[in-house]
Image (cartoon, rainbow, N blue to C red; front, side):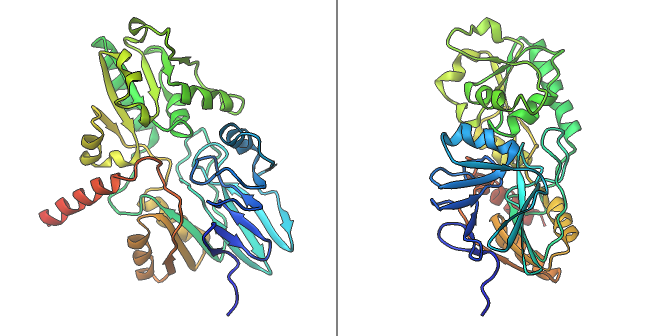
Length: 348
């Protein structure tokens, strides 16, 4: 039996012919990294290859590493295997990895989304024979509202809170979601403050994107300074002592999981905004069809349900276990989704 071009083992996605791993979760010699989130870019590899825009991100997060940057569509060959990086549209510097050997082409998406967010380089369709796709939101219930509409809702929410003399605290991941929110916040409403984790990452990314000015929240920041302003913070700040100085404040969370009321309730946020850096159900299906691939390997997310649906459509689809997590820190949201599915089934 022939060894597949890409195989899954206990360290990650492995190309035996090139002795190269894609987004490995255990230390290896040669790693190609799709993007800077911690479940895909881990410390301990001897050599890293990633897109140029992701180099400062993973250096900021991982420290002193041996990393080589590549441009979009730049081909580099390892032991006869051709590799190239193509935009994934997930976050700044995020890439799909194209792997070609003896005329056979595989693509590993990492995490991706098809909506152009105006911050990261837009997703690019890459034709292939086999497609390894995430399935974070691989259920028909997930259907995203256009970004412009969501940002209008967020700015209106901020303006209403300001009129009531309250601080708006908006939660989003420090890499990706925070910058996407920041880019489109209306500075005519008020001042934008940031949690240190978000400010540090945004400073790394400012050379790549024109962001509005921000002010870091420090121990010297006074509650009076924050009234009427908006504060961008990572989800981990919710319920911490750090947030107490925001009083009186109103909380909001931007995430794909906010599709369901159960997610908002469990996170005890006042307002949920459905905004994700991953594909929705339609985005996944359209992306797969556009690649022309017949073999589909479904990884993190609702991989079982999604792969079975692909099989019904006639694809050679299966699942593979990985250590990728989708939207970090929100894994308990599966409970929220399951609750909502049960309610829908009861109504039917």
